[in-house]
Length: 174
Image 1: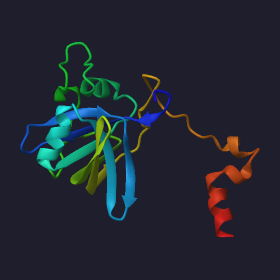
Image 2 (image 1 turned 180 degrees about the horizontal axis):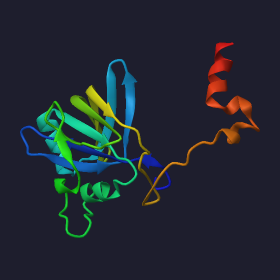
Image 3 (image 1 turned 90 degrees about the vertical axis):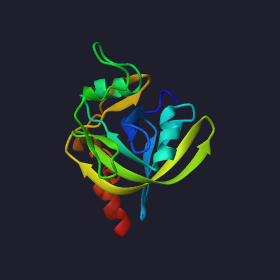
């Protein structure tokens, strides 16, 4: 599993519990209609119980340069910071009240749609009520380290023009 590259997010909740958040790399879009995302949280994590108690969560998609935020909410704070310390970044309350990183690449404010056991983890499906986004490059995690995706240069498609995303769409239409 460690060879799988994944975007890095921080999932937070609030309500019956104070602000709580954790770094999560298992997040993805599920459906456009209704708008649903999923996140997977270890059953032993206090965040798991807090999301169920609060019935809501926010997902902050981290950008390059947010390594310290990811480390803090993974329980590996940088020198001078505490574990799960919200002073590692600028946080704000989403409309639901859940914490989201103000300069996140994207943020999803979600109501809990469904919670499903998945082995050692719990899969939370969230109904997305609000999305915010800004330009930037996503932070990626693979092989126990952070990185950034490499841009796809148009010249890479010169040898195989049918592989270019624009041409694939054009080919489907004809």
